[in-house]
Image (cartoon, rainbow, N blue to C red; front, side):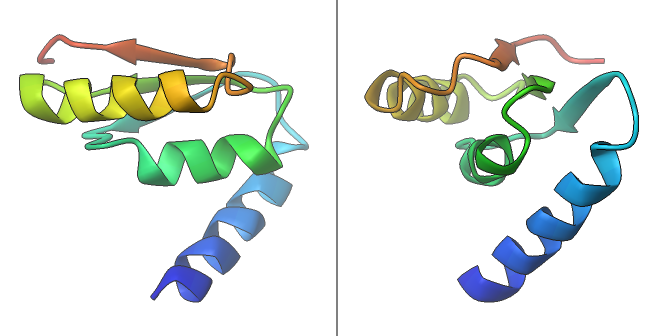
Length: 79
């Protein structure tokens, strides 16, 4: 499961290298996928939208533990 997900994220990262802009993860959960994507897109701005308070708290804890991921912004509103 993890290898498949990593492969998909690497392919997505290569596709986004050609384009300017921001990557938005709607329903980011605990941030696992967007944090993995951040490894492959270090110059991209990433926005994680997660309305669940408990998922956001878990995500924020993971970000604190991985301070090199400064390109990720967490948004807590519903759209």
